[in-house]
Image (cartoon, rainbow, N blue to C red):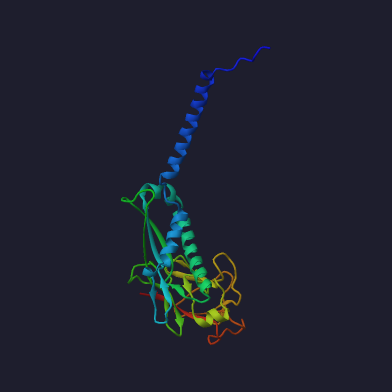
Length: 276
């Protein structure tokens, strides 16, 4: 009985060993990629921003023991990383970070069951490149800035003034949103406004064109308020109303034919053409 000749090891062993070496090289290259720090991503920056927002060293406490958190943030990144991944979509990314900060603050307050935290002013996130940072590095600055980083102090601009308290908000932006939602440029945090909920989250907005200001009911996206917006006793028309010195704005009315300043839960503002 004849035996089948066996394949000599020296004929196939080099092929197997070579293939194993190639797989080992690929595995090592993959591990090197995992070990090598890469460019910092927008999601990483968002997590850093939210951590900085609630960091005890960045929080102040007001006379009512409410915790005031930073509202003005500056993010510095590696120059190449900034120009390649961030600059082309900078406006969108900073807007998303801002939304995440607002959402994070609301979640923190909801978990506590009370409004423990509030922003020190309008939330703003800015980006800039830094020559001394590596691709995997970030430098974050944050502060409480009641002015919200708008126009320089002393600049003349229109504003609205809350009646009867006298609190003022400048109308520096192209679009200024007014309402009960913290995301609004003019956030109406009055207890009666928050409790009665007659004023919508994004109740009205003002569009600025040079030195002209036009008031519109509802959000900039076109969603109307629930209880209307009125100027000098009349409902704001669908096309908006151009504001003039001394115009009185009433946000919300239980009776659209007779808006009243003294109804609990509504807010009244007077327009000023110039505010320093």
